[in-house]
Length: 167
Image (cartoon, rainbow, N blue to C red; front, side, top):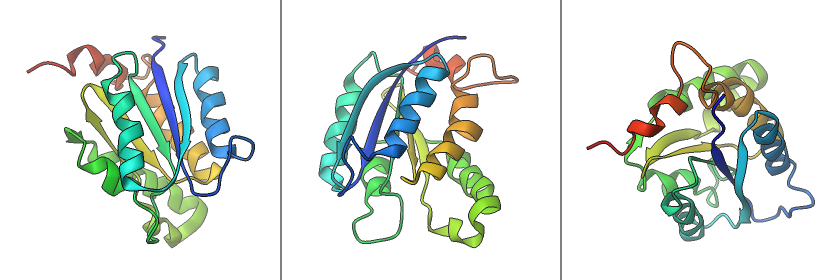
């Protein structure tokens, strides 16, 4: 098992550290999987604030992945995909598709309002997932953790880390 550094960014206009159950769940899951928590923050659902915090992680060579939870819905305040997508060097198309497929079993057609996405920028994996605790649990347990586990076969994202800066 290769441990990596993962940052958690909660996007919310109302949550605090005391009631951020999704952020807490992700932090616990990261540590329980043998990874290190690189940083944790809660930011308002504002495109520019999200980008500013994400850019801090992107330029930190010690951060290998960022999990952003919240702001992926359809309301006027939900801006995580818009904040993140323009910063991506490559989008991991299958992530959002598979998240919605798995989510369908739990919430049915309501999953169409999720704009979960993932990608890579500056050799850093970025995962954007809904902010509900159950969505974070699903995304971590079924998608993110297996791909950030260097022992997952036939392939995983961790094995790509040394090659992400190739030109």
